[in-house]
Length: 575
Ligand code: PEP
Ligand code: MG
Image (cartoon, rainbow, N blue to C red; front, side, top):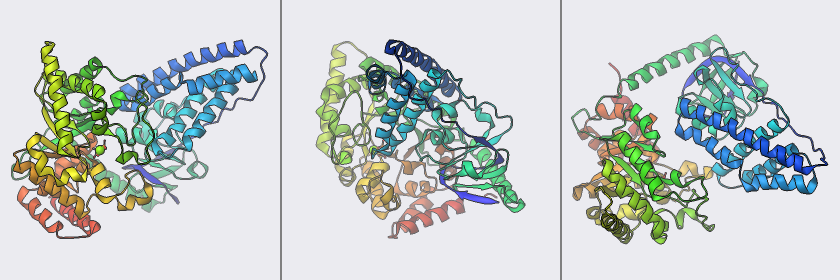
């Protein structure tokens, strides 16, 4: 028996045989050509073939997994026409008179190496996508068939060095019990897919591909981040016991789907989902979402050379609204800048992008762009209950400037004879300044939604992307909890409601405390909904208010979290 430790990437336990994937790295040799024109022609044909293959994978992933997971292949398709890649391969063929396969391999390698040196973890991991695309084109140019990964005959745990999106997309998901890889980070494509499909995964295991043998039994614990090779009877018994408990919990949570989000003493709360694409609204309903509490519209603007038109946006918002109706949809206006960049709107580099010209600040500077979005939103509001939400509001003046533009857009549309709806208008409270002056802002909004991802980073001065200070990123810090209480209190004082759409809203252990602090609405990734509903249905408002009072007397975030965890466990004891 041997236990390997890695990074927990997707929760859950799995036991089964190892399915070892050894991807052979196909290398093109540097060969000279007398006729660069022929090689250029071959490259064009290979790019077309690659586009067909990628489209097939995109469709399969879209159907079997989901719209968001399929996006990676849209990005792959775009890479096939990226001048940085294709033109440099063409230049190599023409200037150095080399084969198309070697030229594309060299161009891909150069681009991947450039990405791999970037600070941004997300962009760094995109190096794997470039290698995936380049590998595909090289394979086609070398005349080799695509390796099939569909050979799995029985449910197995996939063990690989790293899995490219293309490899993952070809698998029979129904037969995959778990994923274990040598390398890979928490935002890699395999991890995102595994989480969406509910498949346990551990990445960053070092050299599991050398230690594991094809067909050996193993236990994978996606929550602890361990893989046990050739486990003994004791370890297998323990794993079986935990798996049974896991199954039982899954069934219990599935049964909650159609039950109301009401506390034990009858307070109705709103439990909603965060989405990034209109197509995800349907998935949110599968988990029993009572609405969408955050539609991040950035995704409509990303990975494309031009900005989305008013008509395009209108249709996207309308789709989300009509899918969710009669439930409400909160659509957040563009939150670009910070860690998110647009090809269609290159922004100058900033020393502190998270403190820079992002989100509403940028929209108020680029009023043309903002107005287009506001017009699309007002038109979409005619199709169902829409709530518009501005991100990164810092002062009353910013909120008023945004509202003035919204009023202008409304007047324009009415003058043009175009139908508009009457959406609620609220703000994200994610800058401490907004939380502190929540009482000043409350009369001017219909609702608040607390963005804890940013509120925590700004309140505690902890970069949310920096692993070296991640131990200081504490949702249960008393400063954060006091701000949440203050924001909810200010909302209620003005007769408004207060929600939360940061990651903290999806933590079931935090839910009773948040109810006690005055939260009315929770919005989270859809799979997190049942567990939050389960605990909220088991508690009363009064006891949660008492819990919040007690825990806010403590000063240590770890103690506060422990107190919340003890309360959580005490309420979920099954008879
Ligand atoms: C937040 O800041 O909590 C939030 C929900 O927004 P984002 O994660 O998109 O910044
Ligand atoms: Mg934010």
